[in-house]
Picture 1 (tube, one colour):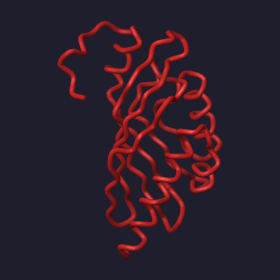
Picture 2 (tube, rainbow, N blue to C red; picture 1 turned 30 degrees about the vertical axis):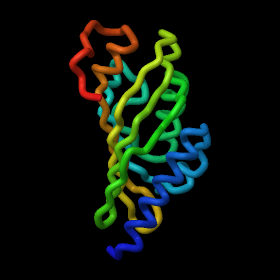
Picture 3 (cartoon, rainbow, N blue to C red; picture 1 turned 90 degrees about the horizontal axis):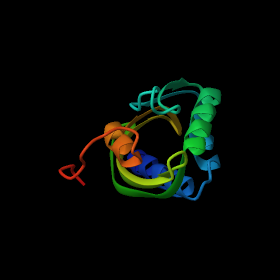
Picture 4 (cartoon, one colour; picture 1 turned 45 degrees about the vertical axis):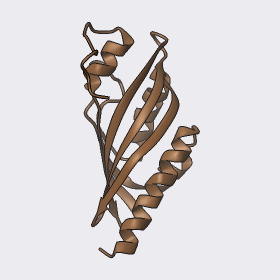
Amino acid sequence: MAVGAVEQNKQAIRQILAAYEEGKLEPLLGILHEDIDWFSNAPESHYRFGGHHKGKAALREGLSFLANEYTIHSYTVRELIGEDNVVWATSDVVATHRATAMRVSAVLVNRWQFDGDKVVAFTEFFDTAGVLVQEGRIAGDLSRAMA
């Protein structure tokens, strides 16, 4: 894949995440392939949006679950790394868990896989236990956690 295409993919992710931070989903939905394969490492037993979502309709449902569970205050990209048709993003996210009214922060690592100008696969990783501790939903000590 040409260097220009990698940079275009990285720029697309920057724009999508900036819009997402403002609550705008259309840039995200517009770049997704109809058969998007979307996976979050979040266990569905604690996070309704977690697990595997196949296709745009299932993804919309997952995003709806996420919006019902959290208010996102900031979504700041730390770095984007691209190679071939894949972009990795590391981001800092601050949100409020609606049910507990607790403000939480997490580092998200996302893998975006492109086929041409469409995202065909997305995988999300974050410290799910650390977020649950911040929300007060499980016991734990975060004093030694990495920032």
